[in-house]
Length: 338
Ligand SMILES: [Zn+2]
Ligand SMILES: [Zn+2]
Image (tube, rainbow, N blue to C red; front, side, top):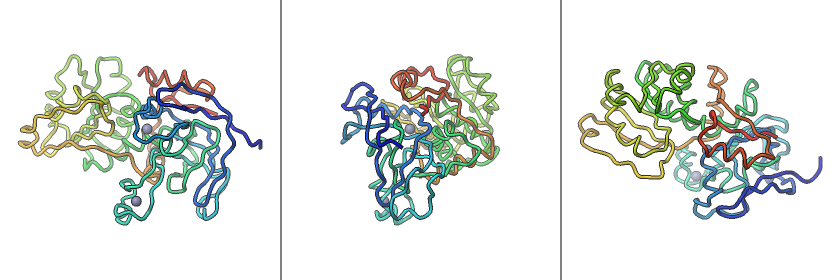
C-alpha cells in the first residue's frame, strides 16, 4: 500500500471541490481506519460546502454516509476486527461521561461529534472513525446501499420506530426524495397503513411500488381532508424541508397524532395552536441515531427488503455528483464510489 490517498475537500466556506492527495491517516487508540468503498451525498453536506455550520474547521472532507472495511485498528480496539465491513454515519461518536451518556442516551451526548463536520468524513479513500461511530454492515447489504442507510436510512427508520405508531395505524410520509423513498418502505414494512404525499402524479406509481397503500397529490387534492378520510394520520413524517408545505399538515393528524420533522426547513414553521390543543396533537423533531441504530436500520432493511434507490458517481466526479444532489433531480440518493 502506498502512503498517499485521494480525498475530496472543501478548503473554505463557499469553496469549490478540490481533489487532493493526502497522507493516509493512522488510527489513534479507540479509533479504526476505514478503507472507504462508498459514501452517500447528503443535503447536509451543504453545511460544509457553504460554511453554514458554526466553528467548522477547514480544509474539511465531508461525508457521513460511509461504507467500507476496517483497514487498521488503533490500540484498545477490542471488539472490531481488521477486514470487517463497517459504516460510519452522522453520529460521529460520544464521550460516554456527560449526563446524557450516563443515562445511556448517546445520541443526545452534549459533546457528540458529527462525521464530516467535526472530523473528516468519507469523501476520501481512507478515513478515521472512533469505534463509538461504527456500525457492522450485514453481509447481504452492498456498500453502495449501506452508505445511504447511515444517515437517510437511520433517520427515518429510527424516527418511525420511536414514533409510537402501532401496526395498522396511519403513517403518512410527506415528500418522496432521499429520505421519503426510504420512509415509505419502512412504514409499509413496519405494518403501518402507509400514505405517500407528494406534489403531482409523477411519483404516484413509484410510491405504490415502494409500499404506499395510498397516494395523495398535494397539487390537486386537499391533503388534510384526504388524511381525515382515513381517520387522520397518527404520524406524519415530514421529509420535504419546506415550511410552507409542512406547517398546515397538523390538521391532517388524528387525535394524539404527531408531525415528526427529521429534516430542518430553512424557514420557521407557522403553527395554529388551537387545532393542536383540541386534538392533543404535537409537532416534534427527530435526531438521527447512534451507530447501533444505524446497524439496526441495515439489519431491518436486509431482513425486510428495503433498498435505497441510488445514482453512483466515481469520487473523481464529486463536483458533478454534488450538483446532481443539489438539483433535486437525483432518484434518490447520490453515492460516491471508490
Ligand atoms: Zn445526512
Ligand atoms: Zn456524552
